[in-house]
Structures are given as C-alpha cells and as structure tokens.
Amino acid sequence: MKIIDTKPFPASREYDEIINIPLYKICKVKQIVNLSNYKNIIFQSPSAVINFDQINFIEEKRIIAMGPGTSNQLRKHGYVAEIPDTEYSSEGVINLMNKSEVTGKTLVIKGEGGLSIISEYLNSASLTADELNTYNRQKFRSYSEIKKQFCNSDFVIFSSALSVEIYFKHIHNDQENLKFLAVSERIQNVIESYKKESRVIDYFSDDLVNEIKLTLT
Image (cartoon, rainbow, N blue to C red; front, side):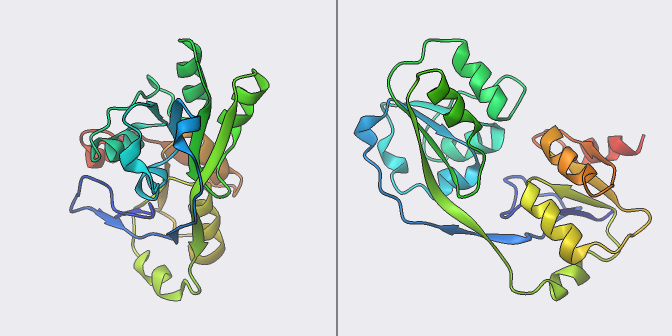
C-alpha cells in the first residue's frame, strides 16, 4: 500500500507506508509585532509556530492552538496550549473561546492567505484581535518530477486547500483505484469541487495507517 501525504513538512510520527511529498514550500516572512499588546495568542497551524520569530517570549500569554498538530509543535517549545475538544477549525477555536471570558487583545498567528474567520469574529464581537503572518506558501517552478512520484499510489492525503488545487492542476491523471483522504470537512469540500469523492480521516490518530485502512471497509 502506497500512501502519499502532501503536507509541506513530514509528520511527527513516521510510517513505512506513508511517503511525504510536499506540493509547495513554506517560507518565513518578515514580522513586526509588540507582544506586550496582547494577552491571548492563537496559532492557526504548525507552520505558524515554526516560523514565529518570538516563540520564546509568550510564557505569560493565554495560548490556543487550532489542532493537535499545532499543539504538538508548541510542546516542542515547552508550551501546553488549549485546543478545541473535537472540531479542529476556526469555528472550533471560536467555540472554545466562548466557553470562558476573553480579556485583553488577541493575536492570531497564521500564514499569508490563511483564513481570517477567528479575527473577524472577535472584532465583530468587540473583542479586539490582530493578525500576524509568519510565512507564505510558494509553489514549485515545475511538477514534472513530483508527478512521477505519485505513480501507483493508493491514497493521497490532503491537509490544505492549496495542496488540492496544485494536485488537480499539475499531478492528477485519473488513476482508477486512487483514493483521496482529507484531514477536515473543509478540505473534503475542496476536493468535491473537483468532482472527486474523498473521506475525512483522523489525521492525528495513534495509528494513522490503520485509520486509513478502515476507509476500505
């Protein structure tokens, strides 16, 4: 069984059956921010954590991660972040924040072109929020060699809308038995916009390969 994960960097847990083939690269961007202005820090992705210049200076903040991958990245720096119970999305973060009083300004750390649902909601609710982009995503100049690596694959995992877009523009060749897997319903909807079916998997399962095998039953 050949499984391709299009995540832009390898998963924290390695599996012999899963090959990491990124479809774009992550590049850090210039950041200017005064952390003393903020009480709450929200990280929207692992890449937001990896590329944040001031990651070592948020000890006294309320730290929220959108999902387990982002939370795991924060743990590498010694931070235990709050995360949504089940819905690892902008809506899940908003529901988490609504369960307790939010005081002070909030900084949402993300990538260029990423969703602004959280900051827009907080500002509409008179809870002041700003955004800081720590990275951007850049497509590769050519996908001809990358396309060859997808030959004879059984599953492709998508964790971003951009990966889906790039795949169907530069990689896809209508392999009959190829199955598409999405890490969220939002990504599943993007896949469906290309008239393809997919299944949502628990990407952070303790046994991701078995989780994928269950999609065959």
